[in-house]
Amino acid sequence: MRHPNFELTLEFAREMDEKDPLKGFRNQFFLPKKKGKEALYFCGNSLGLQPRTVTTYINKDLKKWANQGVEGHFEGEVPWVDARKPSKSHLAALLGAKTEEVVAMNSLTVNLHLLLVSFYRPNGKKYKILTESGAFPSDQYVLESQLKYHGYDPEEALLEVSPRPGEHILRTEDILQKICHYKDDLALVMMSGVQYYTGQCFDMKAISREAGLHGIKVGLDLAHAIGNVPLSLHDWGVDFATWCSYKYLNAGPGNVSGVFVHQKHGNDPEIPRFAGWWGYLEESRFEMKKGFLPMQGADGWLLSNDPVLGLGALQASLDIFSAAGLENIWTKSELLTGYLEFVIRETIGSRDVLQIITPSKPKDRGCQLSVLIPEGGKEIVEKWTENGVVVDWRKPNVVRLAPVPLYNTFQEVFAFSKILQASLT
Ligand SMILES: *Cc1c(COP(=O)(O)O)cnc(C)c1O
Image 1 (cartoon, helix red, strand yellow):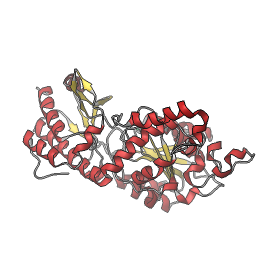
Image 2 (tube, protein in one colour):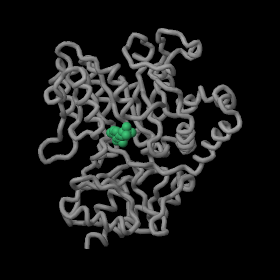
Image 3 (tube, rainbow, N blue to C red):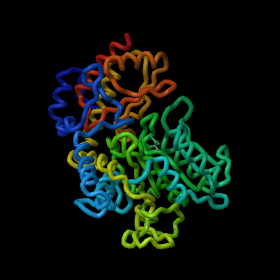
Image 4 (cartoon, rainbow, N blue to C red):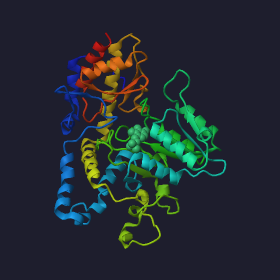
């Protein structure tokens, strides 16, 4: 947000922190240290911090396992057969989905393959897939290998929307125009919600609408979107989506992903899928009968029994999101990211040393700013690192900074301005 009253002073940053309705939440996380001092951790886009309550949540099930063994599956406050259930309403709130449209399971890349089995259904001339150029490598490999699996040549069947020459971010009109232009060839539009490299938040509503008009399925990879930007997957008519829980969701390294399957598909048992016993009608799952009958909703895509310990860590964080309130998070995110943008611009002044490539309109981004440093970027960022800043450098010349509303502060952003200043002299 272009806040007219932003000031590059410690007093201003202090005052903003004082007024912040989420100020108490920082203490609910462990803050990494560098050289004995609290780090300036701007890397929640890569790995969210650990909620202090995680061990309590996991210990409950460790104790249950120790004391009850196998009976834990059917006993206790949340029997392990139901372990995924408490997370559903929380995930639905974050995604703008109905509870039955979401379920936590597997990991992101695995889920993407499973969802494509169901929703990438090439038919005659309509077999191409459209995605953004420079998509996250795992997503590129998924699309490439799925196309080959169906007998197509990715060189020809995978279309990309690219930024215009000299630009870094995609224009919504170019995405929509490309969908419309290739409407007779496309079976699927598969994009990220927030682009991992540029931090651009795509207009998911407009993209879903345009694709829907032409009978093209839309899938979203929400790795950088969930917990970062408001989403309304149900109302937008997105067909399917997946995400990971270890970035903005703070659920811990490699922890459980999840899928969204829109209600319009969720109750159709005829949709082809790779099935497993946990997706079978739960009333009669343990009758162990032949012939797969899926549960209703996203649960019908489950394969395996729930990863109980991982779900405990996820729940610890989801409960923090609920306590903080999503509106409060989005409001602070806009202010804090706006402040970082202001601070960077003020600090560099008229020097041409770096360029923020993330869109400056709040609706077009979350809390990540991607900064392009055309020359000597690696050395500059090393100076930040020596001074306790945790960020991530992406070859060839972009550094990503994410001030996360749940645990970062305005004073940290101010402190960064001093480090930035020193690194440029
Ligand atoms: C982080 C990320 C992944 C990671 O995939 P995993 O299967 O969890 O290893 C995939 N895609 C995108 C867009 C990501 O940002």
